[in-house]
Image (cartoon, rainbow, N blue to C red):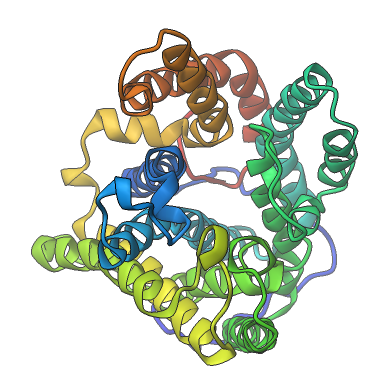
Length: 399
């Protein structure tokens, strides 16, 4: 991995067998990035009810909020949503790095093992989340939501969401569809292409993403779902993670200050991307200004993701608090359950007629989310994770 363009083609037509001793590649700092990505998405979702008048872009006079302040708060809240892009970037980074290590250790990449690992990691909780979503839809008697989950079962939930958001706590599982669509392509590319070829693949993803962004921007598409849920758009984030994995050198963990500066600069870049280029709006503000604006804005988002991920790689594992890495370990469950916890907490406090119910509900929602994720990890996910280890060549994390 020391040479970016080194040719080490993934030869072999048969599935690679695991070597006698599996490679260990757990990096605690990446669990911290996982938790930060979740926390950003969580804040994005709690800000919506807290600043509902701000999101419209037209606050009423009684709100005592100027339009300039509304724009700032709107951009800040939407920039937190870029935690989703950070998830995509981190996913591609890890998959690429793990498969590179697997190819080096075993001589080839086993696509069969890859898919078995992904199924055992993602599907149990994903299907349980869909079950919760269907139960919610049955409770409110919504035929449209029932139809929506058929799309989700086909891993096309993001395509369904390009027509608009729907009020179900499991609607957020659209992102899993994007991940699964990426998995249809990338392990095969890594099996057959050299590092140089993989680099060109990543650049091709970026080109396709920008052509898509330009087209959507010129047609003034809705940035909150038509652009945001588009797989080809989010492939720019996957490409960013791929490029980081292909070009990453063995960082000396002494550059802690530089790593902190990089990690902090990421959210700042996201804020300006949302504020200046309106790449993700809400309500009446969710209209793309132009193709060029979308291209520049999403390039900034990708740059911010690279800064955060690169920064934490430079900081290294020594400075990562154990309790944060523990929460990063259950980040999948945190993501799946958090919007349900937000909605239930909000209903609870509103029913008590407590002033500022939205604000108080944030703390209860976070506590419920962590509790649900911990229970889910120990009772639902861990048995499948233990089975998953049988197909691992690179152990990327402890169970």
